Image 1: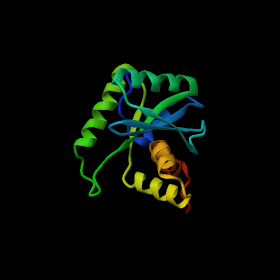
Image 2: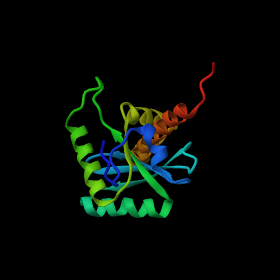
Image 3: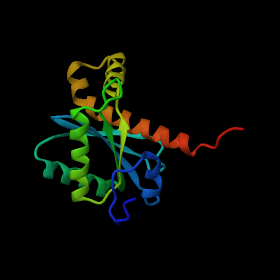
Length: 166
């Protein structure tokens, strides 16, 4: 076990103990051109889509995210884990892991991954049923996907907290 004082990539169920009371989580849907961002409430129950960050240079993008974390009381990150439909990890997982490690080199923050399979399809389907225009869907897709990813993680945390019925 790593005994260094620095945070690392952790299991989702370790996230609540890594946060200070009242801290929120920031969800990331990482794409090649954009990063969708969503934020949780302080109780870690509800995720809300926040914005889309158009990727420029890594350092500038990270500083933008960390400024947002500071302003919103964010204590940890949930990053969408882009596994293949069969559960295998491909090059996108490697890129996501590299991004997480690069973020950790800049800021000591707990990071957990959340399976993002079907997030884009779920969001696209919801936007179509809401009769959103193609342009509006393009403007919101990544932030909504980040919200879906973060909400999935929050739901898993809630299920871990829930007392089991006998």
